[in-house]
Length: 202
Image (cartoon, rainbow, N blue to C red; front, top):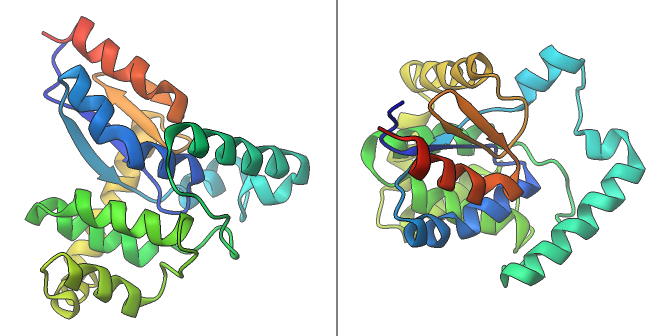
């Protein structure tokens, strides 16, 4: 089996994706493994598979209470800043479209980190185009121009195809790490995915 890099599939509304986004660079570098950042939309997949129109952490309050405390504990252990968002889940559609532009232009990773931090550390509305322009401008990009490219038909189709590819791979949650035909679901499977790549590539 061959795989150039571990595929990192993430959803901007996902709490556990935030944890992985915040630490994957260091963990992957320590393991000597490259990472391909793959933004997608989890909502359409969840709706198709279960009929859910909301996060299961909202639908099932007991699960939600556990998740928030779990993320607090993990963030503290990783030394990652965390503040429970006042709105959950936030709409990450535009951010995902912008990230897809970043994939082709080489700045997806840093943009993704800034957006997740805005949502889960600073409690800012990542669906707000002005916030995304602000983030892009701080990265030295023309924010308004990047937003315009993100909302073209071609780029919308790119994100749609990304989401279809995720579904085709058997992805049902975020974050998910893909190595060849193997999928590893959840922040706590990051290290396992990297180790699998090292032991089974070639």
